[in-house]
Image (cartoon, rainbow, N blue to C red):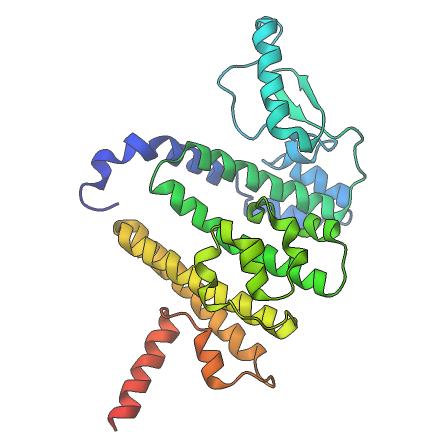
Amino acid sequence: MYGFEALTFNIHGGYLEAIVRGHRSGLLTASDYNNLCQCETLDDIKMHLSATEYGPYLQNGEIPFPFPLPIQFNRSFPLMLFDLAVSVIKLQFWQRGAICVAHDFIFLSPEEPSPLHTTTVVEKCTLKLVDEYKHMLCQATEPLSTFLEYITYGYMIDNVVLIVTGTLHERDVQELLEKCHPLGMFDSIATLAVAQNMRELYRLVLVDTPLAPYFSECITSEDLDDMNIEIMRNTLYKAYLEDFYNFCQKLGGATAEIMSDLLAFEADRRAVNITINSIGTELTRDDRRKLYSNFGLLYVLSSFYCIIRFSL
């Protein structure tokens, strides 16, 4: 933290910083990973994770309420207010199943506990991350709330590509929606299956989403195929990373310094992936260059070499 930022930081960010520090203490340790390496069945994994922050999410399919409630519910709590609070929670989380109250905690549990599968473990662990993220987003103020929303845009792009690609190969839409990342969901995602080209994809679905500004370079009348979908993914990611980078630079301070390195690494990683995956395809050097982000270490080096080359 630099300059006078520390003087006013606690006004808006003090509570969330405490929450983040608490989440950090709940990360798996080296001993936890050593125990997981010795597991031979999913039940062993569940047993070892039960002593960590993931434990409540893996117990009999029950999902704990993602953050401490301002009031602990117990038998002495007024019944009318208790019913009102439970009704509000049901309204917000009805898709997750019936709600049961035990001890001083509220659990959202499915009607029938599902058998333990690999996908179940992944889903529950991902749900823990999503619940913690949503709680932080609800408590955040500007510009932190915008920063947190930027994090979800990458998942939105991946979900859009997943739905469009699956529809192209005649996969069931409901099955595709179950595979989408929860952080990248939006209201009209199920209607992506009706689009036949990128222009329809933008006009019918994405115009009302945060991804709309990134589609300026993707809008064409060409039919959606595997090649065009990958070009669309990388074009969207380029616009998204550059927008996120510029936003962090405007914030300045520690955010700009730390996020510049992280986003530059992501831009370089995608540049390497694009180069490798485009070998032997119809993409030309100019087409490939259009997919590279305009920042990052590789971008600086390439610009430097181009200057030296043209100066000779």
